[in-house]
Structure formats: structure tokens, C-alpha cells
Length: 182
Image (cartoon, rainbow, N blue to C red; front, side):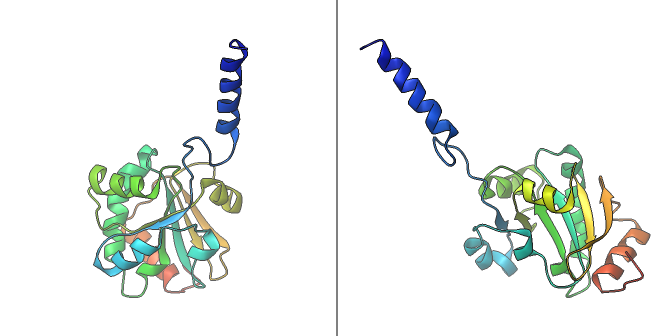
């Protein structure tokens, strides 16, 4: 009987590890991560499951997908943060930045604060599989220009040139609803 006990303990432990949400597995519940005074109250209540359809506005938008483990993303995010701060009033909410990390929301927030020095950088967090299925994403970073219905009209794979004048004009034109400028 004593020989069977270790086997049963291992079998039970293995079963627990295989069960969703068990044995310390970290859930990858999507959440909104925001900081700064404008969204501080929302940040406290927004840590809840999020789906792309809940995040995307019913207007032309630009969606940037990134991850903490992505080296090009880490280099690009400070430039993207500077770009987003200069957007004309009303367009910033259509410039959506989404992390596809498997880390907990507070870990992503800490990464932005300490690793990149972006304490006020606003990002959402979704399941990478959802982004992959919806937009057929195969690598990060990726920037998607979406129409008001959420359909992709332009894709930029890899780091974008956020400080380039022509690219800035293209993004701002798209966000403002200029159909001739994706």
C-alpha cells in the first residue's frame, strides 16, 4: 500500500496541472491596463475579461499589438507612446494599444513602469489566440488600420515609423475618418 501512495499523489498532481485554472496556473484573463489621472479610476475597475469587440470603437481605428517578450516591441513602445501623446484631441481613444501577454495585468503594468519607463502608458490586454484568430497574426509587433466596422484595411508587420512625418499623417488621416488615407 505504501508503494502505491506516491504514485497516486503524482497522478493526482498531474491531473490538477492538466485541469484549467488549477494548480497555480496563471489565468490569462484579458484586462485593461491604464495609468495616469485620466483613467486611474477606470484602471481599478477595468481588470476584467476583455475581448476585441469590447475594445474596438465603432469608428476608424489603429490597433497596435505587442508583448513584453517581444524585443522589437520593447524598442518601439516608447516611440509609440510619444506619438500617441501628440495626437489631436478626440483621436487618442481610437489609437488602441493591446498587449497579447500571458503575464498577469499587474505584471504588464510593472513592466511598462519599470522596464520601459512608461508609467502613464495605456494598454489593454487580450488573449493572443483571439488576436491571432481574428487577424491571422503570426508575429509581433503588428499595427492594424481598421475601418469603422472593424475590418482590416492596412497591416504593418514589425515596428512602425511612428516619428516619420508621412506615416504620422497617414495614421492621423485614418483616425480622422479620411477614407483615402490608410
